[in-house]
Length: 190
Image 1 (tube, rainbow, N blue to C red):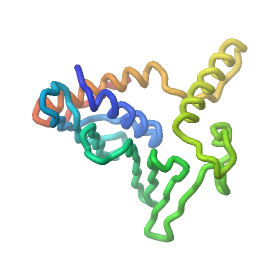
Image 2: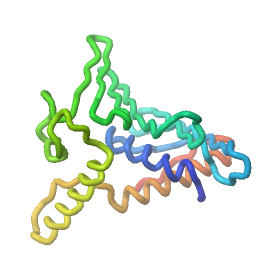
Image 3: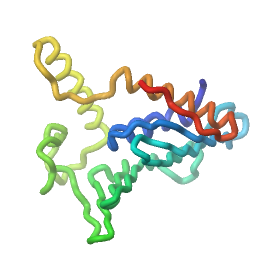
């Protein structure tokens, strides 16, 4: 299956959703569109998701949203509240609930879990984000290689072959769903 917007932006959204929630996407219902005259492939998409444990989601993608920058954001709603993260303000993790004031958690400040400190490269107050995310992935991969060479366990976490196969399966099912008048299609277990 050939896709543009879904293949470019959609795979990032799919992986971020599964990585942050720990839930696998089980089925998709997609509506792909091409708005730029002469384009053959999608430049806009809306995808409904069914995830494990009954969770649901929506991915909205566009390469033609006039005036927008790379506004890649994620909101996760649960029984206790909502977590929100936006790539344009990567230092902030926002928590909202009905029980109290909105809280903004910042990288390397109070209440940051100790397990996350290995991913922090700069002191609080110095912006960190996009490029450092790649540095963290490369560092995690290098640690896994070293651990394998030294015959020791590694706590590294980075995308692997299975993640890539899931993303290709995701793209295929999204394109087929859109071609089938937005029919719900199930992703294969990988």
